[in-house]
Length: 373
Image (cartoon, rainbow, N blue to C red):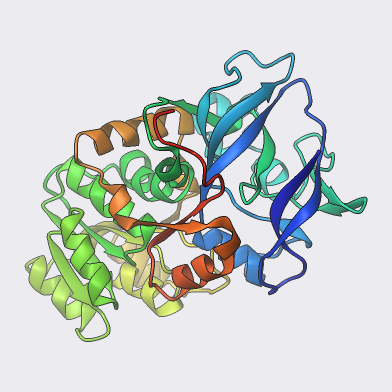
């Protein structure tokens, strides 16, 4: 089946919209999905420019939402016409999946980051040549195929254009707080970087009752939005001494929890330095940069923890509906971060994401889609 897709020909290239990409035939355990929209995530940019290593040409995109067109003979949970949000794929059978942590699936890299389908077949080709996919999804397309465990069914009354980023960016930030850090009410949390992931982490911190939710960034407009999304305090690290301000806010103790979404070496280091004794820093950005940690002063004497978190330790089928419920309650206003772009304007949308002009760009792939239909 020939489809339209945004292709990155080689590392560092801009996206090129092509209409000659071939989508592999639907398999018995797959769903064929008509794409409505897709968020653009910083992970897409990291792979586009080669920060995380990748195979090219490639079709990126992993925050997709759409409508099921067809289902394979072995599909049991979905039917044509269902509205879905797409996330990562896990096999559901390995020891970690059976423990309820699909983000730690033993074959996670093979399924999501190999560039091929779970069974090793081509997902996409162009002129007979392999085109790598992403997250077994590749949502920068007009049509794609996915497996059931990629998908979360959502109510048809909801606006699909807004929901795609719940499958990665918002799920990652909120899940890091809800599922991994699990702060008790009254504790303090600092979030470094107020992009989509950071804003989601802040909103989650506010929901669980953190007494201080501290937003740290260099863009005044983002810090202003952070205050609307649950931050009790803001620090402009370009104009203020971050550590000094943190100590003022926390009465000299430091924060109980920190979430770094920037992947910048000095910022990651600062997130550890700003912890209270016994505090935990979660470093969750895709980055090639390294940090240094003193096992004696930082980790032992101060009893600090530094952890990595993949996809917020989320279970999409549980966490996406939870975030939607919080949104409907007015507690998770993720839509304040979103801006719609036409699919053909993907390079402008990506540039606006990189330079901070737009927190969460969303590509509207089907411009004829009407919410609630």
